[in-house]
Image (cartoon, rainbow, N blue to C red; front, side, top):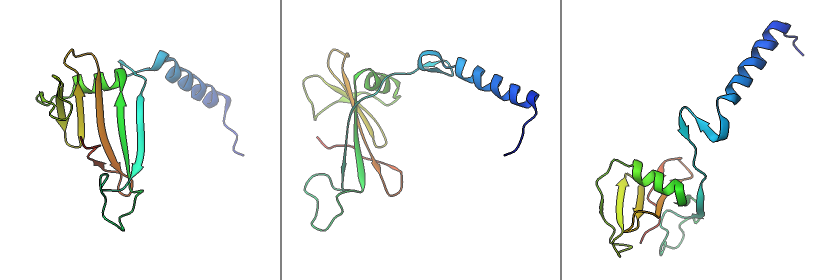
Length: 128
């Protein structure tokens, strides 16, 4: 085991403490953290009616709900469109594989996306 001089140990402790103190209540870099809620399922590349022989464990499909989904929806710079899947005045914004929908009152949102577990790249989320 390597011995570190007391001054170096004190400096490391001070920096670690300062780093932790800079993150009170889930705040980091001036941003307030939002608790995640939602669900995840594992499936194949073709979620609905997959062809026979296709592996059924290559993708993670995630749905984010609650305040985190609202923050995602409001942060997406994409143009708002009518959500044809949900109807009832819902709007949708999309950025690549990420799709977020908000209700007509603008108070509840849901975001969907997938992750290809083989490559780590984003994939489309759940279909309508």
